[in-house]
Length: 317
Image (tube, rainbow, N blue to C red; front, side):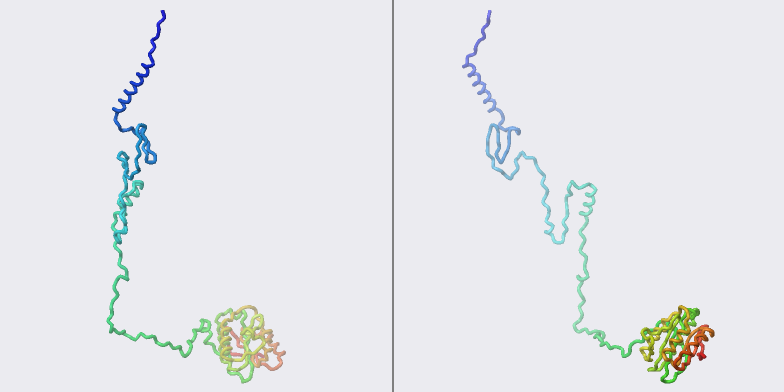
């Protein structure tokens, strides 16, 4: 036996749907009117709600349900009080703890008072009728009438006490001093100094205007003054001073060329040759052969230097 399924009329379906819709609308109206957070969105000042649309204008005031934000207190103006150094009352939390203690010590120190400068003190006031104790006007400078005497060098002092080898020579005669400065003369320093002192004293006694020359030798004879080879000197203050400087600077060195040096002195046309040397008698005898070549008679006097002294001159024959 077959069973038949009962058919629900279409009108019954429509009525059921309408009934359920009315019941759902009634339930929605009974729910609270505040929308859920996940159902509200904001964009450009427009609040969008699935069930309610409303337009809100932007405002500077935060909404009531916004999360509170801590705003820092305004900093004081450091220029409000002259001379006061700005301080920090709150240390940011991002600074390490080690530096917080250092900053607290610095902030807590009192501001030092400004030190008084030297220009802050008042200057003394002097009476208007006060007069100076002494006359402080500049004194006119006058140059000395005579130049100061220069201090002689140590070597010049040592040679200043020498004695001339000879006395005055006849007027109009030519004298040539022949000085041996070979190494043997310097073996005894006192002997060499005594020989230079005797030569210097003899040159200083030469009369002004007299013709003379000074030759020094070791391996060869050269004039004491450079640039005067083959010439005679005329005695005078300038020549004497230059000769003195040259004699003081002489040094003992080299071999002894006695005979060639004697020939050089004869070639100057000398009337007198004053020869200061330590040569032996044998060496002097050999050198005397140069006298045979003299064009005119010439007198040669030997002043022997030995043992720190210079002996009286003896004529060479």
